[in-house]
Length: 328
Image (cartoon, rainbow, N blue to C red; front, side, top):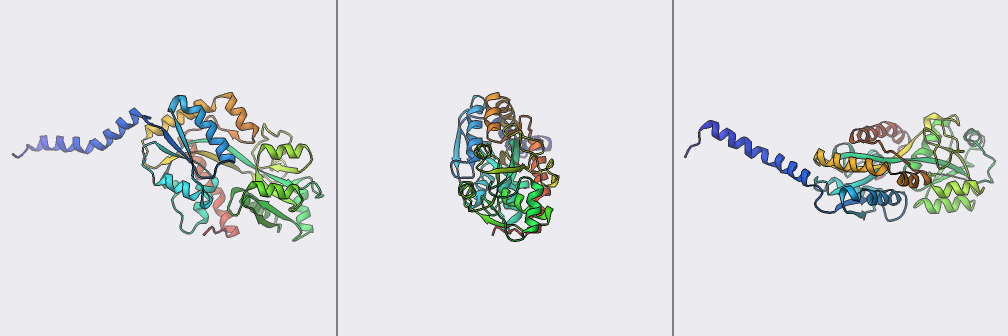
């Protein structure tokens, strides 16, 4: 039987709306099962100490969060896995500058497009970089470091937690801004690099701010010259910023945040973001983060998180091109 045109169009419109209605129903019922948080690094380290307390705090709003450490390829493997996951809100990424910005810009065949393949949810906080010197070095300020490097070409080297890390790029940016030549010594992680600085095997280290470094600075086992944050941080209020030290162009704060696969319903994205704002309003969590040199961002939104990601691309793309960094 042939349907009247008006009835046919009505039925067709209803059929077309079914996928959208299904997504809306799914968002309204969310979450109905545990959420998987992918941390694209091995267990331990800054991302674990950021993600696990977050998961514990948001469970009252989102239910169970299952942590999955998926390291490999400088965080690219875990990041790519989330980019390919179902956009249903049950797989989210704890991502940051290395995986979402540096890997994308420095790879000739990146496994994902960070600006297209992810829905930013929230920036949990910012982790600035510190520039350390072995105390035997005759250097006490950032300016003295630049002057010494210029007067002693080839004598200084600096360690980082690996080639292509955010700290490596901060070291290279310092060289570009000061016109100095300092050899880069990449390590397989921050621990070995810190051990070699303390023992005097390397004279200088560029690393993420952390409680251990602040304690070693206080006891005189290393000397922190400056921190790359825009303002002094609560965990180390006596350490000057790079702006105060005369190099405002070196200001950089690596973000760590939550990202979902593109296509995740906006209602779900906002639900996770709202739960995160509640968690980050907790004073105990703020103190926990701040004590490690990680500055929490309790007012983040999906829109602010997207702007932050875009700004990091603008900041680091010219640096990566200038130093010719290639990760593959």
